[in-house]
Image (cartoon, rainbow, N blue to C red; front, side, top):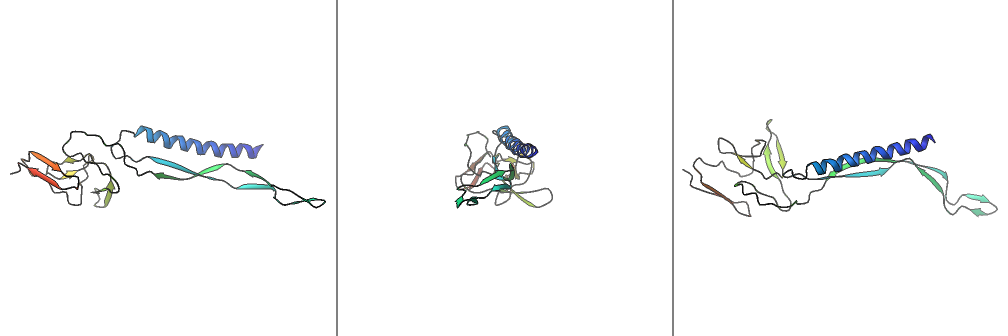
Length: 164
């Protein structure tokens, strides 16, 4: 009876984690650049009560064995890197990555990080940043003061007009 409680508790803990991951995915359904997670589980050890092929006496053998599982456990949560739904926002610097790729950004401590969040903004000095203010690297030049329009081609070429 005690083994059954431990096995059930292990399974409930696994399912609670599964629900937590699903809830996080739902909570971020409208978060720009969010990539959903999936949970991966694994069996815990099995206890073998009778082995298949064991001698039953009189020349008889058991055709199948008896194994009792001890529940499951979480082994990983992995990101699913599929392209989400593309929506026209009307913002001049909103871009989307179709297929593989990330925007390279510089963290406050100077290290590099990567994001797929394409809701880009302009800092007061003209640098292109994320919504969090992290500077976007990799060829994004500052936007000059007095720029009246910005055009970004499907290949990523940025064209500005009206800059002084």
